Length: 244
Image (cartoon, rainbow, N blue to C red; front, side):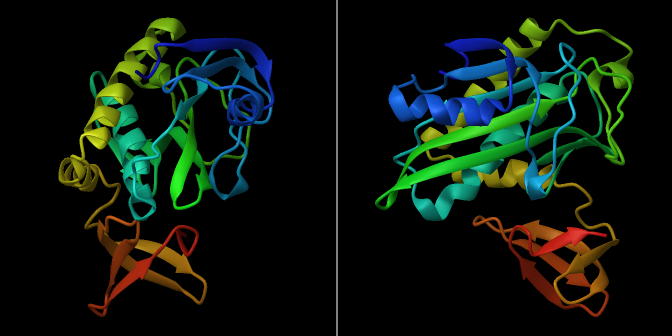
């Protein structure tokens, strides 16, 4: 399903924006991929910009119609996309993890970002657009992002972008089929196993203070659980806590 239709664009502000605009006037098959050689205004979480040199990386969005998914289970969609990207990278790269909620890391460096935007009609999702930026062949990063890394810098290999996109779509499709089949426990378990710095003491910042804690897990609704040095377990939703 995912990647059976691929729309290749030379230049666009954001593949998520392009897909959303297209959906205003036409119907796109589920799994349609909008891929851009150059994305001029790629967006990430926390209103961050996504740096991507033209022609060196994968920047694309996937159109999905998870109308059957209960709104309370939205985080499973995030897990699905994160795990698909991690599955693809883990074929040739060690140390791949998912930094809550859905950044993809290799050890302590960020290799991919994910931005999922949904539209709701009544009590159901009308559509979802999953934007993915994956650093593939870029070796020099000029933004102020503190820790970017790419597949090429990790493996010293140059990758064919079309082949990489097709392989990545296959991995994403397998995970999406798990979601469609209701394999929530599998998705939850696999996500927990890949959780970045799970059980490792780190510094965090919430709306009130900075503190030391360690992630003990993430609940099915996306709430991250952080244990403090005092033995208390705090729960946070997206944007309520961040690594310091």
